[in-house]
Image (tube, rainbow, N blue to C red; front, side):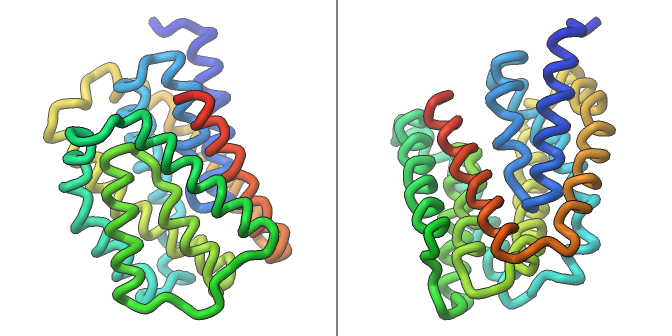
Length: 241
């Protein structure tokens, strides 16, 4: 029987993460990870969160398919999926804590610059988007940091709503690979599965609520809120790790 206090805290973190995921299109796991790691330990937390998030993002995919752009999402996804199998190699040649902090600090710097108005003016071409995907896939599979692709997309000239849709599509396919890796690697046990099944209904409801907040929102306010989420989550990541 799970500890009622731990379960309540985990549910609260899941609801907050789900609202952020539904609103921004990403960052739900980033919100949940510090809390669930303290409660359950790092391995169980990562596995549980990936299972919950993978199930939850399915709710967002239909709308993302309507709003997203194949020109952007396809090369980004292909670059990510190509590089993800090699991401684990980084764990063998680099200190994961130093690498994670370096990435997070870089995200904070770029997101802060964007918050003050910096963006690139011309859309990225297929080669550049594939390169962003490769970079994102390597860091995602090695350090479980999924902020690189969203950061690049929100810095571009596309509308925030279209960028959000492309991020959702990217996170869906990259999440499938991560979950498949965990399942075939034997990391998913009954403990993680039952915890994920317990948290999923709360995550689904929160994602739906978060996605409703986006409707009719001002473009500038939405973009600034997303960047604020990135910066706040990254600061927590630096402190936590």
